[in-house]
Length: 225
Image (cartoon, rainbow, N blue to C red; front, side, top):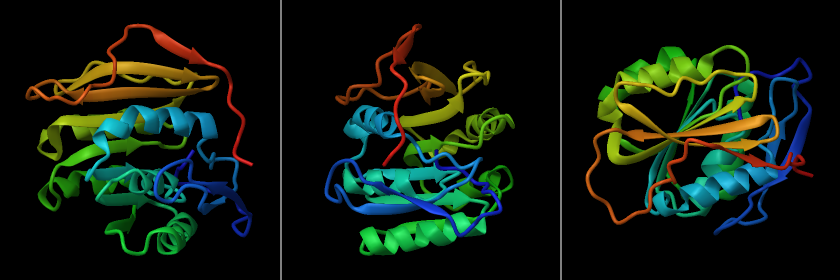
C-alpha cells in the first residue's frame, strides 16, 4: 500500500511494475517497511478497472502517496494531472525519481507534508479533482480523519468525483457523511476498498461504481514480485 511511514532500513526497496496502459511493465521502485505495504497486484488491478471510466484527462489527488504507484497507474491510463502528498522524505524522494523515470512529460505536483495538516489548505489553491485516493497507514484512523476533511470541503469535488479509501479489514470506516455518499465496498483478503461520491451530482453518461450494500469478497492476493 502506498503510505507515509517507513522503517529504519531506508535503503531497502522493492520493485513493482505498472499493470496496464501507456507505461505497462515500467518498473517502479518502492521502499520496503513494516508500515509501507506496496499495494497488491490484484487489488491495484481491480481498483483501476473500476476507476477506468473516470481516468481520461482526469485530475487526481493522491493522499499518503508513498512511491507514487497509484499516480503512475493513473497517468498510464489517461490521467492529465496528479497531486501527490506524503509526509515521509524517503517516500517523496523515490516518488520523484519514479515520476521522472516513467513519465517526465506529465504534469504532477509532489508535496512533502502531513496530509491531515496540509489538506485543509488545498481547496483555495487547486481546482476540483476527478479522483481522490486515500491510502493511509493502517490503525491510526487516518482514513476517517481524511474523509472528514474532504466532506467539509466539497469545493474540491465535481459531481462525478470518485473517492477511494484503502483500509485494513479490522478498521471501521465511517460511511455516513454530509456531502459524501458511500457507493461500494470491495474486500480483498485483509485489504478493504471503500468508494464514495458526492451526494449531489449531475446526470452523466459515465457508469458510476456499482452501488452495493454487500461486501465483495475476493481471494487473498499475492504481493508484487
